[in-house]
Length: 125
Image (cartoon, rainbow, N blue to C red; front, top):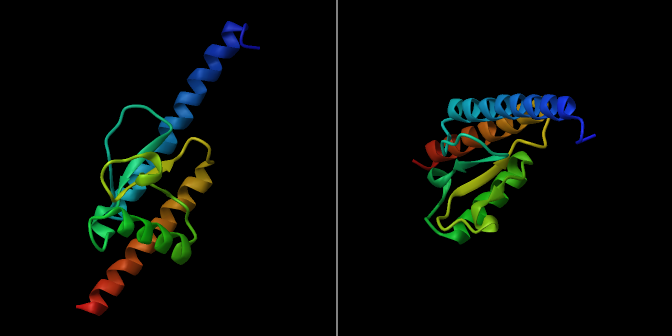
């Protein structure tokens, strides 16, 4: 199969288009929720900046945030510390192994989480 140059070329081109579309969906959806990502030009995941949701700038707070996201909106997004990130608050969102529908669902979960955090912040004020 990989010896077939036409197939391989078509496969790579189609894969690149799909990855680009999913990345654009993820980044624009997160921006709508007020969450930024590191800019990149290629890859299978992006680094999501969740530092503003940390209770304090520590890896312990990052783990608490991860658990809060997991339990409140049922989204498992990898904390940066699990990928040896040197700064707490960065999460790794992989879009390569998801359908467009799943990317959309993940975005909706993070939007809901951001709204929950905003509401609880307003209540605490």
